[in-house]
Image (tube, rainbow, N blue to C red; front, side, top):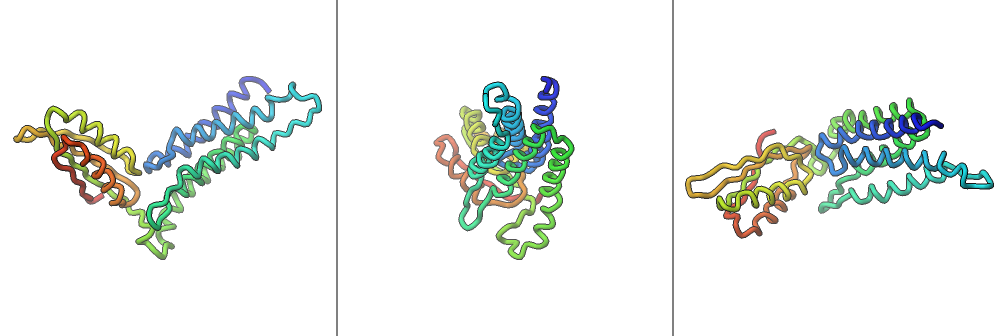
Length: 234
């Protein structure tokens, strides 16, 4: 195999992984564009290594490329377990973990040179995440346990003028720990020489517990005189 063909497979793996990750990033999931692209290209590199990296190192000629592919499946299982979180009675991150697993499969196909199947698999993964989402809400018998209606939040914190930059950075850091996508951050001077820092967020579903957690973290800052959040119409 030529260097060009190897690079083509690597490029295909990272490109298709990025396509899958774009949908995840757009929905503000934990594993987004970079994570899925890295998982896919990592699987591609491992497949290339197993198929072409040990040819001259073994005397028996019994190198089995399928062994590395099998280990990729197992390894991604551990990575996926890291994005599965339990929140009370609900479990979040299962779909993200499954998507990472699919990204590894797409990368493995690209590493094996099966471009058409890899592209088709990418289309199926993105289609399942996009098309089956509204269908899942229709057939859900317990909407209160899995409501994914888009939600928008406004987050406000009031601090002294001298500590505005510090509090603004803390607010962004606290909100980035949530599953919501940060849309904007605006600082406004008030008449009492304080500054109001306001942030807007959007996500796939309402989750007040995450907002309360962000409020709790920011309220520990001595320079913050008040902090609040509210849900606004999406």
